[in-house]
Image (cartoon, rainbow, N blue to C red; front, side):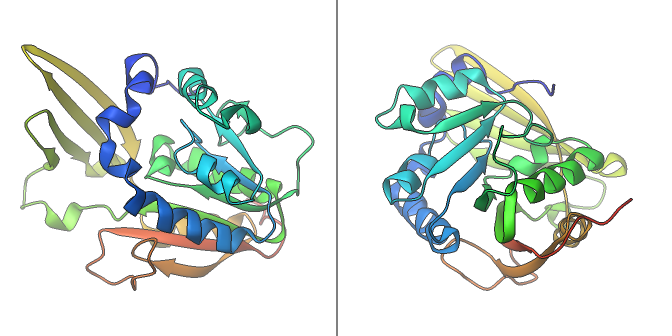
Length: 251
């Protein structure tokens, strides 16, 4: 089982630490995008967390089930209004199956760079195969993930800041030879400094498309954001949609 980086205080203070992603202006277009591609549902969220998107999506009429590694994050979901109505399977979303739900979901989605929590290529490939096993034929897999920022690193540098505020400093440390990055967080609380360092495997859009093909899925949409802005060479993030079209390709 992968390590749980979202336990204890991180789970309890998740909304407080990342308030920008809980703003209605962020959540509403994401829920609208997912609902349009879910049809009548149901939907499967990988890394459901505290239900940031799952709760409003379910309230829109789409039944949602989640897979989540962190029991503390699930506890936060359960404490929210409507949280008990969402089924959650606890485990690694690269491999755990939702019991009795093979080929049942019209939509699966994985947001906020969570694919990078899987720190090997094998695990990321397995995630696509696991998603395909849960989708109906023609079902969609939606992923929100950054474009690796290597081109923005000055020659010879390996570190790029992503958050600099009076209470939170964060920077990514790249290891290009391993295609990995460690995200370092420093939260300033009065005289106390709390730290978190979490490893990730960054992945390029073209590599994700190949993983999808191996799982029997094909790219059908790609945008820069939930509002549908075109994906270009300058885009720092991408929102990709793959459709299940066939059986997985053997390796």
